[in-house]
Image (cartoon, rainbow, N blue to C red; front, top):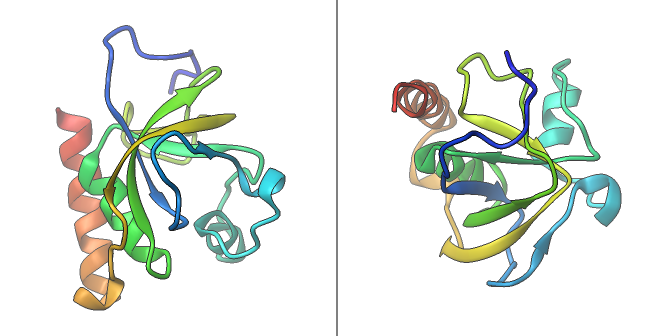
Length: 137
């Protein structure tokens, strides 16, 4: 998987996670904000690899929506990454997930995506489908 910067074709980027941000806010990594409850922490707790010094963004709208749902009352944002975009080495589908130093909130797509709208297993199945669909786009 390439670790080059931004794809040559302009893309829209999304993020799902911590609620309460507004248009124009800067989305910073957990290592900077000190936020303990993050999906990155969950991934690390489960033995996965993730970086607390990076913000994760995706080109898949539904991928970000699922991540928002997996965060307690998480929000779904359209963002503009800051700095170099590096392909997320843990994402099995190329071109879907990226790491960056920070991101500007362009707009709040959905301020609260409730996980209780469906069971956790259904959200995880949706994440798999959404990731595959975003990679095929």
